[in-house]
Each structure stands twice: as structure tokens, then as C-alpha cells.
Image 1 (cartoon, rainbow, N blue to C red):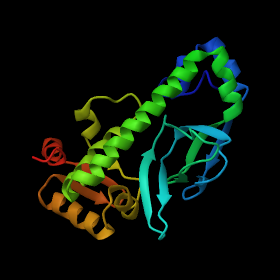
Image 2 (image 1 turned 30 degrees about the horizontal axis):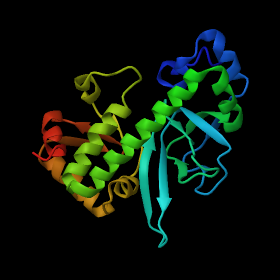
Image 3 (image 1 turned 120 degrees about the vertical axis):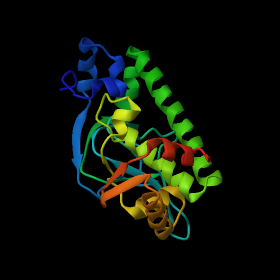
Length: 232
């Protein structure tokens, strides 16, 4: 199963050779959840970690007054569930139908002694998460609504591109899927849903994007969108 995984080269498992994957396969279980289903909630015991095989999920925290802040979206190949304490510090909900590999945390960590490169890979993932958190702080704290939305659309285009695509012009060619709704985008960018809709309309009127339907956006002018994202 692991050796034949179609996205293996994009996951944390990629550091293992074929003959080493048997040890990982012995503890992994495939899990499938439906759209809007919870994977875990803030405060739950962090007994498992996960690798996303397909689909999109959102990570969020609830404020004391009930407001929601989405802290990120995770996509095919992403790893989640790392917890410094024994419980999860955020909640995770499926945006689309999602397929995952589930690893018991204790058993996975036991493999670190045998395969130190796995531990190094997870350390790299944790570092990437820290970088993403810093980028999110910049997005929320210093950018205007137009800059936030332009940054989000460019990032989404790259993340929703087929596995292996790394050429920006190919990635931006044609409508990109937007699996999350306007409310999710607003809660991620720290905006209201009305502001998201108005800003999308302005970008569309300017010719920078086209919106063929609610769940696809065509980046018609990538360079213009990049200039907006960078504050020019």
C-alpha cells in the first residue's frame, strides 16, 4: 500500500526506502471522512497524527465569544496532528471529502529510533508550520483586504495545482478550484464575508480574475494579482 502510494514523494514517508516502508505500513490505517466532518477538536487527546492523501481540511480555533479564526488550510500531502503537549491545540474539519493515513503517535515515535530520518523530516514539517504561522500573522496584521485576498488566491492556485506542477504559468492557466466557501475565506483572512464578496467583485471588475461559478476562480492577470498581493 505505502510503496504504491501515488503521492508518496510529496509526503513525510518519502524519506524511507521501499524496504523500510513495511515498518510504517504495519502501523498505518487509511481513513476517509466526509465534507464538514470533524477529524479532531481542540482539547482532544493527540493520540494520532495524519497525512492527507486527498481533499482539503481547515484548521481553526474558537474565541471565547464564539467567533472562529481559521488558522490554515491543509491539502494533499500535508501532515497534521503534531502536538507538543498531549492534546490538540486546534480543531480540524473537512472542507471536502478527505482520505488520510492515520498513524498512532506513540508507535510512529518508536520508529524514530530505527529511522532517525523520519524524525528529521517531521522536524522540517514543524518548521514549515512555524513559517506558515508567521506568514499568517503578516497576512492578518499588515495587509489590506485586497492584498489579503490576492495573496490567498495565488497561494491557493499553487496548492490546488495537480501534484508535480511547479511552473507558475501552468498553475495559473485555467480556473482553479476553490473548495472552501466565502465564510471560510473570511475567517481565514480576518475579514467579513461581505468584504470578501466585495473585494472579489472589485478584482473581477478590474479584469484581474474571472468567477465562472462559486467554487472556481480564473486568475486572468497573475502579474497584476502579484503586484496587489505585494502592496504595489
